[in-house]
Image (cartoon, rainbow, N blue to C red; front, top):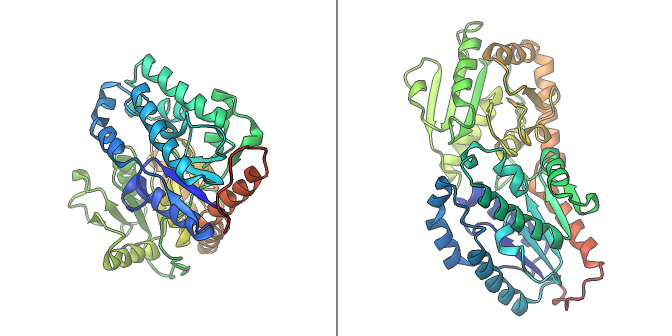
Length: 380
């Protein structure tokens, strides 16, 4: 079966959109060797250069002139390739107006209105920008054959905002961005309580709150450690028990081994994000069998199962409330061990790219049986 793969960013770089295009494309290619990436590099470069306008409330990607050119470029490639199906990852502006004869499976963390109404960085979008964005999103929804959204939050919003038919919609988490299964090592007894944070957007991902949680825990146990990867906040520098590891490039073998060791030595992964549509990093923590602690916001509740694979607290929970729940698990070694095992099982069951690929393959087979009139590509 011939597949056209289209993404919001190039799948040939791990740095693109947190690595999601890289790992999703790799999974599709593994299952369908006759997979072809359709790219628009020059137009993408122009769009990226104009992205600063979004800070001024101008929605660049969904401007009519750009969607027109994306449609023209993608259509030409599709006509040459003649695929059996398209697998698209968060590329609404490239696909909204293409010919509906091509079966389309669309995967994303959420639809346009869900994201724009949720993240504060889009608060300055004008009514015109919102209207144009929704127009593009509705056009895409009309020609989608199957939508794979990461969370119940995103799926509920798609139904409520756009009236998306439930038969077209599936909740399919994305997976841990890891090149290989890291395996599971239970936490070693007798170790101090260690918190791990991995992320760059310190403020949005709840970094200031995390420091207060760590302080609340230190009031009960002066040996509690906090390890921070990615961000280097000034407020955390020089604090005893806090270790800043800086940015770690997972594509570098030695650096990746260092990050893996941090996960294995951690007691909990803690990232109380203020805004989070999903959180791939929670999947990565689960791969190592470490419970995640987070705020119940956005799509996080579809990644972390409260009281089973981790802890979810209300968005307005205090540092003391976080500390109390963490300690309630940590002071019961059997419960902590059970939570570690549950997190690892959840990774094996659904928080991995292979499970995501299963859902995509099922969707491809389902839409291939539909009554689309497009010529089929060469079968493998």
